[in-house]
Length: 309
Image (cartoon, rainbow, N blue to C red):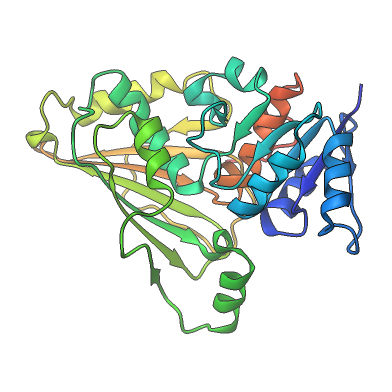
C-alpha cells in the first residue's frame, strides 16, 4: 500500500534532499504544492490533512504553526526543526538511541539536530553504561559544511571564497544544547563550540576527555568496545576499530546517511578524544528523517538511504 507524504518546506535544502531519497520509491507518493500554493496556509493545511505522513522542513515558528494546522487529522509528523526536540509527547528521532519501536509507533517525531546527532551518538551509550560520568562538564567542538545554515549562509559562503572558518554560537546558549544534554543523559549542559568550514557538506563532532580526572571513567579501549557493542546491530552507525593518524572532510564528498565513530586514546591513558564523522545533510538531517519515516511506515529502516563507505 502506498503512503502519501507531504514535505512542508520542500524547497529548502533539507526538503530537497528528503525528496531525492524518496524519488522513485513505490512505497510513497509525494503530495506536492506548486510555487503559488506552497506558502498558502489554506493549501498547506489541506495537504497536511490529506497526507499519511508530513515532514516539516521549516523554521521553528512555522513548524509549530504546521503542527497546529494538522490538529484533527490522521497525519503522522516528522519535524526537522528545533521546535519539538525536547517537547512532551514527541519521540526523539534517533532510533539507535531511543529504540526503533519508539519511532515506529510514534505519531510525532522530532528529527535530531546535526551536531547533537554526533554528540549523543558518542556519549549516550557510555554515560548510560556507566563508563563515563553523567555529572561532568563536557565540551563539544564541531565543524560543519555550510549547507546546514540554510540558503542565506550557503549564499554567503559561495559568494565569498575568502571565508576559511566561521565560528558562531559565541554567546553560548546554542539552541542545540538542551537536546544534547537531555539525550546524552548529562547533569550539566555541555559547552558547545560549533564552526562552519568552506565545504558544502560534511561534519566532525568531537568530545575531548580528561580520563584521569573523571571519576569512574573507563579507559579508551573500553570506551571503543562499548560503543562497538552498542551499535553492533546498526546498519547506519559504524565504530572504527582502529585509530587513524588523521581524519579528513572532502569538498567532493557524496551524500551519505551513515556515521562513523572514533575513539582516540593517549599512550598514558590519561586523555581520549571521541569523534563522530557524518554528513550534516544525511544522518544529520534528511537521512535521519527518511530513516524515521521508514520505521513509521513499517519498512526497512535503510530503504532509500545512501550508506556507502
